[in-house]
Image (tube, rainbow, N blue to C red; front, top):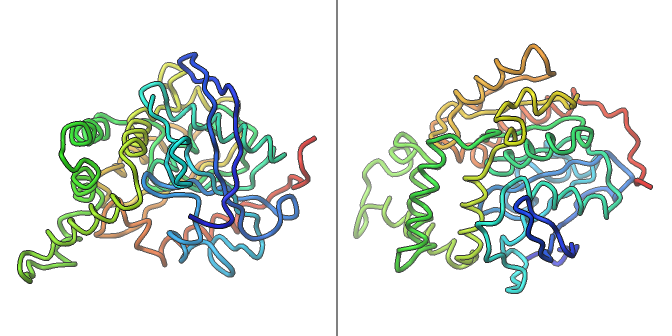
Length: 329
């Protein structure tokens, strides 16, 4: 956990289901001081956190694609993800939550920070899904969103995977470890594992040791309630839910630029879904579609640093803010 981690408490935060509860939003700010430079919001992935200069160190930092010398970078932890190690901040009623609720929590936290306009929102996996939720609910908040390896909706394929994850988390003797091992087989591809291991053995097949390592590693930093929550939130993704699952209608009041980045080998968030979203929106919105070319599947946005850097530098260079960075009144 970072020493720079800060907290915002939202009292009587109302969920979509009508229930109210007090929640904690932890966050970190990197780069230029708040309200002195354009703001970039970076949303973390399922087992990620607000320490974006750590897990995405090749992308976020001084002179990097998301340049902390020129931007103020804000990253918030999804409430209940457990990054702050405060047991009382965990969320046990995860079934009551949707990713839309997280979007509202982030927006309220930003309001308390007097942030009313964001130059660019960037997020991979569930972090990208969250951007979709936020831009629909707050159509004037972003100049640009860049969802990477994500989608505005949970497909049948994604729901099926999350359902199996839920079953493992509910029934396994080592739920976090076993669920993580299962998830890793969807985050990578057969070609990726062949490239990495090629059937090599030590005392046993090295791929098995690699999976065991990932399971134990996550168990050391992630709690069962946090995993249940994050898996459930992923399955709840649907930025069009309030508009009959019609994303075009959901975005009708927004001029936000949308820059889709998919991964051609992604077996989790399938690239074809983003291609179809692009075709659906291209005649009515400022939207582009690009792909990361990789054998590594969903995790390529964490592996193919050079390609991600090139794509983000291009989009941020072309996305010039015309809005003041002064704090909201």
